Amino acid sequence: MTRWPRLAAALGAALALLVLVWARSAYKARQSPPGGGWAAVDYEPLRLAVQAYARSRPQRFGIYFRDLVSGLEWGYQPDEPIPAASTVKVPIALYVNQLVADGRLSWSDRIIYRRELDLAPGAGVLQYQGVDGQGYTLRVLTNLLITISDNVAWRMLERELGRDNIAAFMRRLGGRTVYPDGKNITTARDMGTYLAAVLDFARRHPALGERLLDDLSHTIWDVGLSGLLPAGVRVAHKEGEISGVADDVGIVFARRPYILCILSEEVQDLNAGFQDIARISRMVFDFQKELPAGPSSGSSGT
Image (cartoon, rainbow, N blue to C red):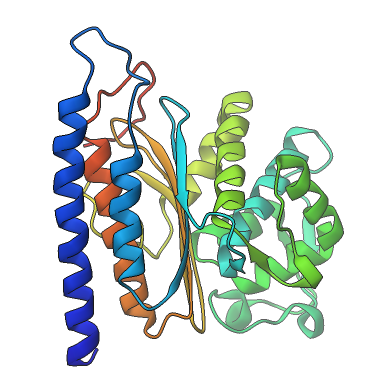
C-alpha cells in the first residue's frame, strides 16, 4: 500500500471506532432493566458505524447481518449485485447435502473427472493431482469444494448436478439474484439466506449438517471474517476472491451468534480488501459481545 491508501484506511478505522464507541454507550444507555426483553436491541448505531467505515473505503460493499438470537437483521447495500466468486460454493454444497438427505444421492456416488471439461485454474489440488477418467466420490468433492475451494471439484459438481437445478434450489431457498444473465453474481442478503438455510438443514439433519458446518469451520483461508476475532471463536464461513473482488460470508458462533456476509467489488488490493472485511467483522463481534447471550447462544464463543 502507498502512503495515501494507508492514511485513508487509518482515518476510516478511526471514524468507525468513534462511531462504535458512541454506539456502545448509546446501547448501554437504552438497555432494558434486569429481566427486560433480550430481543429489544437497537442495531442502528452498529449499522451506522459499519456504514461510516464502508464509505471511507474505495471499494463497493454489500453487507448483510442477522442476529441469531432475536432474528433482527440490518444491512449496508445488502441487495447490491456483486460477483459471488467462491462464496457460491456454499449453496452448491448445501444442495449436495440435501440430495443425500433425501436419498437421491449417496456420498459414495462417483463423478468421473473429464479433464477437457473440468480443468480449472485457481484454488484446489485436482487441477494438479486429478486423474483424467477417474471417479471421485461426492463426499471427497464436496469436502474439497469447501475446505480448499477446489475449482475442479466445483466444475465437476456443477456439471453433474446441472447449473439449472442448482439455480432452482437457490431460488427455492429464497435467493433473488441467482446467476443473472448466466453470471456468477449474488447479493449479501442472498448469501445470508443460504447460510440461514445451512443452519435450518443442520437442525433437521444434525449429522449431515454438523459435517457441513465442520467443513465450513476448517477452510484453509481465515483472513476475512475470522481474521481479527479472538482465538477459539468458531466461524463457519466461505471466502471468495477474483480480480477486484473480496468476499467472505459466514456464521459466527460467538456467545450471541450471528450471520455476517460481506461482499466487495472494485477492490484495488485484495490483501487490503480482506483486511477491511476483518475490521468490519471485529466491529460487529465487539458490539455483539456486549449484548445478553439470550436463550439460544452458539458454541465455541469467547
